[in-house]
Image (cartoon, rainbow, N blue to C red):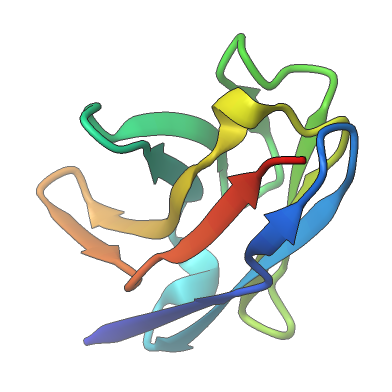
Length: 116
């Protein structure tokens, strides 16, 4: 079993920055791809960024150049550095771990609100 706990969300003004963290516990964490997803009110959950076990990354077009995903396998922790935040980035951000193509785990989510 895997548990994921997100932290670091909050209220920030447009143009500001936040750093999200996802602390993972359980077996095989460092051997699994992970990612950040978000869901805005009235919209479907969407991929923000993913990272493989070796550190290869993939980003949604809407966040490229502004967000950076990383992971520290020694600490079983994943991060999302978010810069130049926009009001449209407002959403609940979820941490995801993919154990197999059909077995995935989700955190409880952390709210990010970008507003003046």
